[in-house]
Length: 131
Image 1: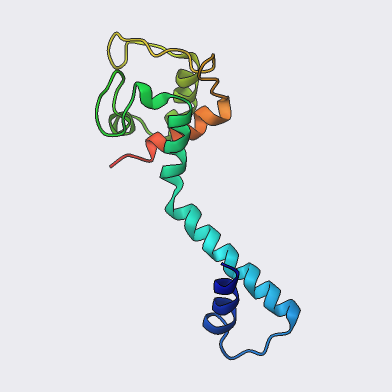
Image 2 (image 1 turned 90 degrees about the vertical axis):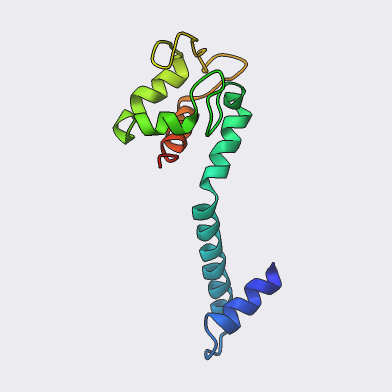
């Protein structure tokens, strides 16, 4: 990776510049930041799906098909960004009646231990699955 940063920052991004050591370091940092930003924009869905798996959400939900609870894509189709606070509360406190009579357990309790920040992140990810 270090070689790639060195080569790209010197030869691809700034091919006609003679660089002193400080400039080389700054160009490498700039290039590394661009790569990191690209990766973050490319993989956010996988990162939040990993959180859903870690918090055992995928025990009852699937992304694209009903399991015990609704498919996340169906949830995304039904709600909008302005519903994030209410959905975050629903994830934490549980509930029933919206998607059938099977209740969703409160996820703030063990074994899930979902924090409010995690619940909001999960809800935001779920809503990002909207077609």
